[in-house]
Every structure is written in C-alpha cells, then in structure tokens.
Amino acid sequence: MGVSPMFSGAVKTNNPGARAMLRSICFYFRPRPANLGAFPRAAFEMREKLVAQFQKVFGRAPEVVTHAPGRIEFIGNHTDYNGGTVLGASIDRGIGVALARRTDGQRRFFSGHTGEIFPLPAGPLQKQGGNGRYTNYAQGVLAALPAFGLHAPEGFDCLDLSDLPVGAGLSSSAAIELASGLAFLEVTGQFVPRETLVRIGKYAENNFVGVPCGILDQGVSGFGKKNHLVFIDCRGPRFATVPLPAGAHFWIFNTHTKHALVDGLYAERHRECMEAAQTLGVALLVKATPAMLEDAREKLSPLAYQRAKHVIEEIARVDATVKALPTGDLAAVGRLLTASHRSSQTLFENSTAELDFLVDTLEQTPHVYGARLTGGGFGGAVMALTDGVFSQEEAQTVADAYAKKFGARPDILHMLTGDGATVL
Ligand code: GLA
Image (cartoon, rainbow, N blue to C red; front, side, top):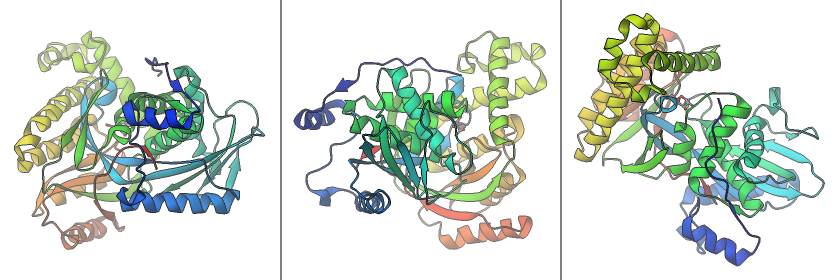
C-alpha cells in the first residue's frame, strides 16, 4: 500500500545562521537551547552516550544526534488505516541516532543491539535479513526521501542506541524511522514540517519494510508531548495534543509473546477491513455508520461484519475518550479502554489468551481504571491506566498470577510520557 506524498518543497540551506532561524520558526524540532542545562536530563545523557559511543565505534565525532520516542497506543485499535481517529502517548524511552557523512559513498550502520558495524552493499538499497534487519527502517527512509522531493546523504556512518524494551509493541520501528530521518535531513541541510517527517516514516514502513500500517506510530513519535496524548484524525491526517489528566499513570505488562505470523495477520486484518468497506460502499470504514453496517449485514461475511463492527465502534470509543479526558473522569476513560480490549478479543480477534488474562486480572485489581492490549496485537503487551496509588507491589501481584498460569513472568514497566522526535 503506498501513500501519495503531499509535500515536496523542503527548505534547503547550508548557512548555519539561516539553519538556526529555520529551526526556530516552523519546523520539526525545538531549537537546541544554548544552555544545555535547560535540556531534560535524560535527553542530555542520551546525547552524551551517543556521542561517546560514536567516537568509540567510528573514531570521530558525529555531525548530528537525534532522538525519537516509542509510543503507547492509548485507544483506537486498527482505526488508523481505516481513516479513523486514535489517541497515543509518546514515552520517555526511544531510539537515539548519531550520524556523520562520509565522502567515499559507503553507508555503514552500527546498532547497540547487535554491537557490530553493518556496511550496506554498494548500489541500490536492498532489504537486509539477520543482523542487518534493523537497517531496513533507515533504508526505507533513504528510499522514501526522493518521493518527497528530498535527497539522501550519499555516504555516512550511522549509530543507534535504544532504551525501548524489545517486543513490547512500543513501536521501535517508528522511533528508528523518525530518528534516522531527522538525522539524514539535518545533515544535508533540509528542513521539513514535522508532518512531512511523519509521512516519510510511514512511507518507509509501507513501501520498503512492507507493513501496511497506518500513521499512528509515526504520528505519535513525531508529535508527542510530555504529559499529553496525541490525537490523530487519520483522514487528514490532522494532529493535536490533549493534556493527560493529572494522576493518570501508565503501566505496561510485556508478555514477550508474539504470534509467529504476526505481520501476516496484521496484513490480513487490513485486507478484511478494506473488503468490508468495499461491500459497504465506502472508501474507508470511517465513512460507515452502525446503521449502514446493520443494513448490509446479509451481504457481509460473518468475519467481515465483526471486523467492521470493531472498527466503527472503536472510532466512537476514541471520540468518547476525547470528550471524557478534559473532565478528568479517569474511571470513565478506563471503562472505554477495557471495552476496547473486549472488542479486540471478541470481534477483531487480535488478542491472545495471555493478553486476555492480564486484562481480566487487572480489571479486578484496585487502583486500575482500565486495561487493554496496546498496538497491533497477536501478542506483545497490555497497558493499564491506573491512579498514582497503584504500586510496584500490586503490579507484582498481577505478574505472579500470570506466572502461575503461563509459567513465565511479564516485564513490568511504569511508563512516563515524553516529547516527540527532536535533534538533540
Ligand atoms: C500497529 C501499526 C499501527 C496501528 C496499530 C493498531 O502498531 O503500526 O499503524 O494500526 O498496529 O492500532
């Protein structure tokens, strides 16, 4: 599935004064403050770590250092590619990239995950497997740039470090796309609106990596804001931030389970939704109403009916959540989150026994407002929205019950929100 880039007019300059001005007026990151002390400590530490590691691996200093966060899907499951609405939160963990150009055209990657230099073969970009698999996200971005009227650096050394837990469905892929995209643009003196960076990430994922995802992951990583949720109306797309009510806490229970066919199942759900839309006579399910769905029930296969019902009702739940948030009624928000999970469990069928067990247990646990699977599903993690009293001890009790049933312990992460993609 491709997207048509809507924007091609990047502003290009190599003049340092003009670059500073461009950053400050309209573009994708906050200017780096002259006084680094004003920087959040974690970002400052991440920068120092990336610079030191780059120096160690490549024997010189990087030209640019960037960071993009992972995300929690708050509510809006599989609504994005159906043109619906979705709410996500960027977290205070993510992927940092350090980059410097080379003059010999070689493109070399180093990841903290593999601990080795991976040189791309000369010639056209090619999807890599094994230890080079992670380069596919940055390669996808390099391949996307010309489609947006932008150009890629010819040769470079690129290093990435991540503090995102593996396999938790917190979207390390979008984080690496945005952090490397930002680095490629910065180092070549090209400045684009934040929205274009987000679209480039999605284009990379759809066209190079080959996942027909929507814009949720890249949109939240790009537009995230500490103590806020990101609201996306995926039809525009239109991005906005919504304050997170005081006292709202996120806990992630990462099961480390993953269905063997997860990518294929995601694509299958995508296909089922598109087919249901076609039968309903709309371009995307966002255009269908509950009444239209009931009228067409005979024409739809039972599965297509279920998938469409989930999406149509989930979009309504996102809208109800957006209304409930400013009232601070976290109990009402929590009920919507759990209802979203039940719909995934029974209608969209992208949950698993492990995720259902966690939601069931969390539902019975004091200080929990609601819980649901977060992300594509078919394994991964459950997110719980709790009050500030919910503690590590209570989380351990949930993990104990899980371990008793499944023999393995989920990782427990108390997640804080963080800011979106930025040059450090
Ligand atoms: C994955 C995709 C997103 C979205 C979610 C499900 O995270 O990358 O685009 O479709 O699944 O809501």
